[in-house]
Length: 456
Image (cartoon, rainbow, N blue to C red):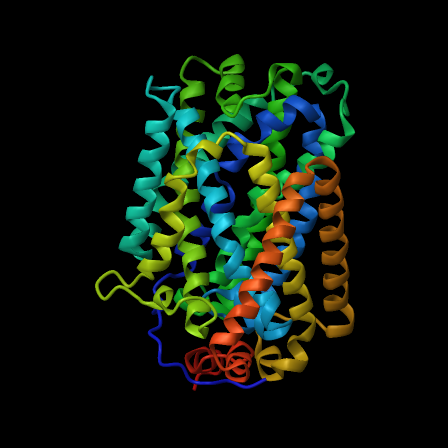
């Protein structure tokens, strides 16, 4: 592989380790963990406490991939870059082609959660609240990353207070009888494992923002290592309290955390939890457009998607056209917002599939970019740790596909159909450009990426 220069604008590193940690944990401990457990527990029962533990297994592989690749090759739009450069151009192209669907689904889920928990305080139509949130997050992501980080720090602290308010007193309200029967529906339990992988996807944030992180080679693996244990502990504790405090037959709503909090906390308890959910919504939507717009921007630099998405606003330093293409369509797709479990399953399946190809790329890293691998502050030996990482990712991805096709075949069918459409567009794109030059571009790194990695 070669490393080439690029004439496109780049984003300057502006976020330190504390800002990165707030972005990462705030994005991971986010609205999905508030809105998903209720509907999932209504069918799967107390077994979702085990489901979140199992979902953490593929999440740990994702964290490992991000730490290794982010340390070796910190770039903007990391997932696309890693797969196209280290696996194959077409598989890399699937990332920016599928990202709009994932982004729209994520925004719909978070907007629905915002509406459900805001209605705890105000009797406002849900649609009005959903549209208000979508407009807010679109506007703030057009302004820029520094503003997003400042907002994230404030709301992250509020989110943490709300979670501890639910977990600590709630642990004393658990009744062992509420965990019986533990497996009322094995199929629903398996589907919950796939759906609960979605909340862990916040750990993919860092490899998309590598270009904007100070000292990314060391910051990325350090923050990932600190974040995964903390987030997993919070998730398991949260769900254990939810299904242990009341019988699972009373669950089934997106706002169940606040409703359950009212059973063991004073009158103000459910409002604190509801505020936490609202904070989580904001920390989630802040980073949803932030991350995905950088991936579109990076693919646009290569010319595989319209070059318009690579343009950076002269004042706000944001890829504003990429933000718009991700942030505007959800306004039209709001009628799909109530399909929480289906949307979450789609996000989890699409994301884990991409990370499997990322794992294959990780295996190829020492061969394709040996200098990057050798100079990475954090790395594993190829025939030991890397081999285990690829094998583990393959097993997890295959399991997710099997569960989805059995429990929600429509979701799996939509994703397969989208991949077929992507292949057609990819072949069409090759007829409009020099295919040899496009291949060279999609298997090379930009000059600024090489310079930042090696200090040239």
